[in-house]
Image (cartoon, rainbow, N blue to C red):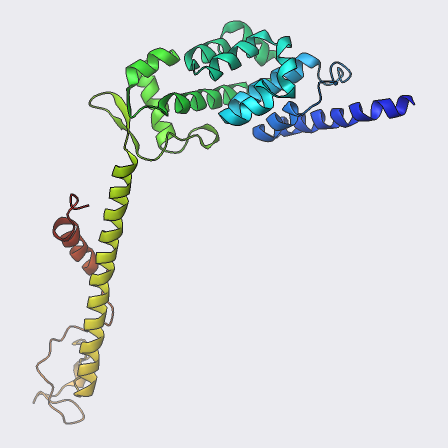
Length: 300
């Protein structure tokens, strides 16, 4: 009977152990989902590996770092994991601030001396703390900027406890796609270094640029097709009229009277070879003309 009673907890131990393995391998999202799905019935029965407080700390920290707002509420803040948060009051407060969009206070709690020191002393977590905190910071910055079309970098620095220069460097990484966990500020976001702001173009402006690029690309293709067709027609006309063009380097093809070896007089044709296809360089010249003259950026 005792073996039957222990079976459910055995499966929960396996789930917690699997989540711990994901953490060791750097698969943070899988680890967050694994810790958050461990039954509340498992408390200190797995104390040789991790205790109840460890489960609460791992699940909440990894959830903040990897889960979006909806998944974080469903799995950590409002899910079966909710009861575990009472064991880690600091993480519970950090989650509460994040839920209320108080991102500066959330990061301040996570980077405070006491909690950070405890995280760095943890046997399983210490090697991942800097990466996870950077992931949380990037996610908080992206969430903070989401409702704005333009925001001052200095103001963002005040909210997140850094200088405007440091904030600009972090934002530049997010814009270049080198942020943690693929977090992005959205299409059309850009830094105005002159005014010290972070701005996002509206969907209408992004659409307008996309249409203009498509038209320029289509116009370039039209120019290249016309050049190719003209070259092929010229080549066919030369062949039909028996006109051949030879390189000047091979002097034996022509005699002094200006006739070819087969007795026919050469036509007055340009000696440069005619290719059926033009080079990319010649197309790029026309492309510049297209960009400057054929496409009006204000016509859409």
